[in-house]
Length: 245
Image (cartoon, rainbow, N blue to C red):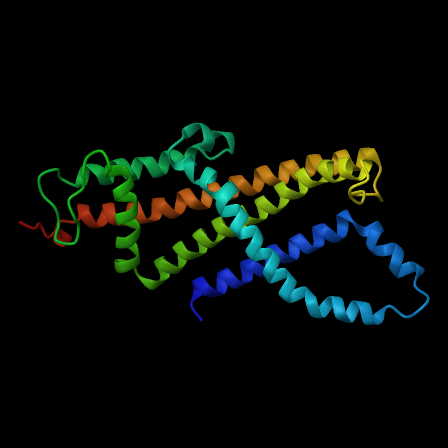
């Protein structure tokens, strides 16, 4: 099984398992009451629960990944263009390293010539095109060990952003769920916790969201830095330059 496929499957189950854990923790009172009040043995319930846990985890992981791509990953990816976003999540150095290699790579691509494996690039679209071309060049020319290293970092970006999305949804769901419960439309969230405990959990959730976003941005920027650096070093080696007509 390819490494990328294996990482994707593991990420889906991990994220789905986290979502299931959060759902149980947020509504433990609603789950515990029917089990404790049942006069019969509840072992059958747990067998059924364990049987459904894997497919439900995969389903929830896929749903969260879809939400993450729409709601969060696009914003995190803007860190390579926006220094403020990178600084907000403590990744100024990663931002500077990436842009240093991208600027160096842009200088190595002449305006009036192109290499036989590199199509002409308009000056206005040069930054975007060079990121795409350098990633494709890395996939085609890098050694297997370097390619696996890149895959692991990008897989960490996907996993961390998906976990950040799950945590963000939980932090948003707690006050909204309690408000809906007060209006009689939903069950109370964290009914087992005191007000101080709820506030502490929300603060911890916000900090976890920040940390996961910071890790996600770091791995995304470093993945592009790897590809830009690899292509720049290849271009700067005169033995690898093949100038076309």
